[in-house]
Each structure stands twice: as C-alpha cells, then as structure tokens.
Length: 367
Image 1: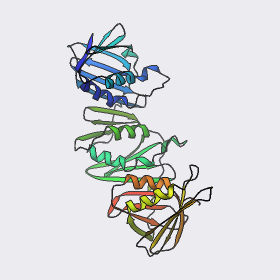
Image 2: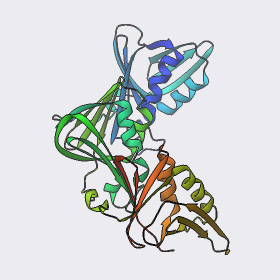
Image 3: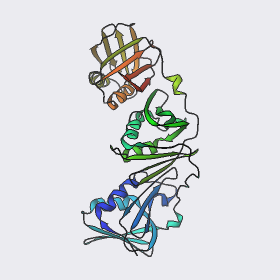
Image 4: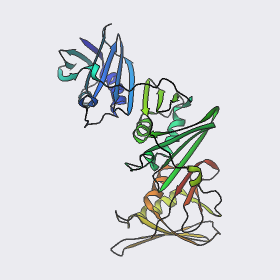
C-alpha cells in the first residue's frame, strides 16, 4: 500500500519537526520510531518519548484509504537527507516499508502502529491563551540558560511558567543563579504556575519561529499543550515546588552602576582563559570609578582586566563563577547592562537599563 508520494523536501520538513525528541536508546524499541498515519491525502507524523509528544501533518498522502505504521525515525531522516530533491514514495507491504526515489530504493523494518504509545491528552485545560511565536520564543530565550541539568532537585530541571493578571512570567534557576523574564499581554489570567521540563523548552526554542503567527497555550494540572504552525506539542509537567523567585530577587541594593555589555563580556572572556576547568572563579574589585577583574590558576598565572565605570558606592571585593556571568552577557542583545550589589557575601543583580521585565541574580563564590 502506498502511503506517501511527494517531493523529498515536503516529507523532510515535517519529519525534521518531529524527530528532535526521538532518543537513540530506549527501553521501548518502538520509541525510536515515528508514527505515520495516513487518512486520504492528509499524513500525520507523530513522535513521543512518553514525556513529550510532537505531531504535525501535511497533505502528502497517496490514495484515499486509511493506513498507519511506525518506522525508525533516524534512519528515515538520514536517508531523506542523503537523497536529491526529487519525487519520493513510501509504501508498506508485509511489515516492510519501501522508500523509492529515482533509482534508489530502501527497505526498512516497521513496527505495528497499534503498539505505539501516544500521550493521552488532558480532558480539561485551565488557562488557555495565545501569544505571537516570536514573543514566546523571546521569553524562553531570556531564561533558558539558567535551567539546571540533571539536578537531583528534579523541579530545577525545567522552567517555571507563571500566568497572572496580564503577565506571563518565565523563571529558571539551578540554585546558583536565577533568570527572570516577563511579558505583559492584553489578556487577563487567573494565577497559574507550572514547571515545564527542560527537554520541552529546548524543543520549543528549536521549533518556534521569529514570526507574529500565534502559538496557542493550554495548561492542565499535569500537562501543557502548544499549538502553532501545523505543530502540536504536548508535554507532561514537572511535579514539585519551585523556589520562591520573589524572595531570591534583591529589592533595594544601594550600590549600582551601568556599563557597556560588550566591553564587560570581552574582559571576562579574557580573564576566563586563566581559570581552570575545576575552578571557574574570577575576582571583581569594585571601587569608585573602576572595576578590576582578575583570575589566577594553580600554575600561579594571572589575568587582570580593568574597566572604567561611573560608580561612587562602597568598595566591594567579590568573586563569581565566570561561566554564569558569560552566559547572561552572551544571551542579552542590549548595549549596556546595570549591576546592583549589596556586599561581598550577597548575590549580584544584573538588569537591563529602563527594562523592568528582565532580572538575573547570581550568587557570589569564595575566591
């Protein structure tokens, strides 16, 4: 039975959309496959890792019948990438899929579509709203780098999304630094907060585009759903209590200064060369008119950088993990940043001048 007859690119695009979450190694072999379901000329491609599910559809079907099968996602993707952009057909006979393009022919094993474990969609969603894709992408981009990776505190391995009033807030922390970003919408929401897993956030960043096309969000008690551009992404939520970010963000530091983001980034990048893999600490000595950055290593080597700043506050000698500072400076696109400090033992607050919608808190370290 013929499933698909179309140009290579028309099949490759939807396949690339769903293949991102497919793991190479799985306890369930069928999870390395994607589900291909055909109903007339509408073909749906679906992948899942049990936690996250992505589906998309395209009018690339052949014939009017209904059929479904599953096939290895990576193999199909690798074959299509290696083929020229010509007409491709997919057909299934006796549990084998045949892919034909010109004089190239491939036979692939399939597994039954009935055995494919799809994620059950929540019956009831609470908050439902839509945002432009570029707005949601910006919100995620501003905080994603602060998510923990494989932390034993599993609720840190994700991003907190809060809807309240007219605000949509994203917060991420790994216990050493915290990033906060918010956008103000025209819609009103009842307060709801959920923790979205790290893998889901990374997929959304890959799939969302810089466009005003809407993305519809629907939040249930244990699930979140995103609908945009013929793509439906359903994700389980992380259970647990996210730290109270309002208590972490400092309120009234009196030692403040602004400086050029690019100049600080370059200085820190140079100072980081003298740090070691085990110890990424840099020392920041802040005095009226000057910021001195220094780093040393076990070989007694040293780097010293000095920047002029418009500052008249207390003299502060404080240490930071340079990676945490580089992450935020590389991620921001503004010309200048503001830094607020309490003392050598308090966290530092990085903000964007005249923009209350972004805050980055980084803990000090002993140097």
